[in-house]
Length: 190
Image (cartoon, rainbow, N blue to C red):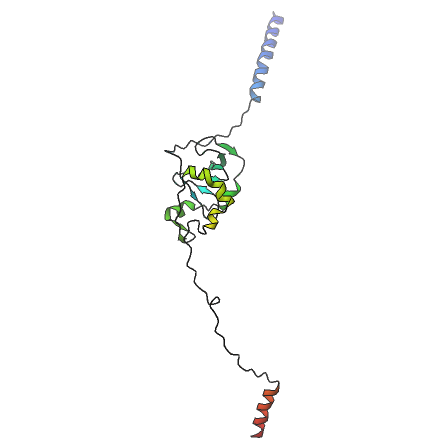
């Protein structure tokens, strides 16, 4: 009976032991995707001045378009997709273009000001952006417009740029030379 009992306990330990060790091995690490944003239609964007970064101003989260990709930060991570409303995949780091985007761009958009000047931003439909972004960048479209929608400061002529009046040089007597001697001679004669 003791042999029977010890054999049953041993068999029970063998069956339970692999199950418990296997349960500890199955570890999964997942990165959750950002929540879906419901758009009533394709979003319009505005170009951030002095960049080729386009931002969606009408949603409460940052969504950017740059170089053919839609980008968005969420919970300290970056995601990108070829579509503005789906297909988000984790991107390992902050994209380089993001360094060019001022943190207060939304305030600038709302106030229609950029760098202290009036910003007449142009709202660009999503389809127009998709069809033209590459050509705009290759042809430097926004730079050629010379404004990015930001009203240029009036160019005042500084004093340096104004034409100088010609002033005849005054004679300078350094204490050396002929003119000084002549003056001394006249003085000595008196």
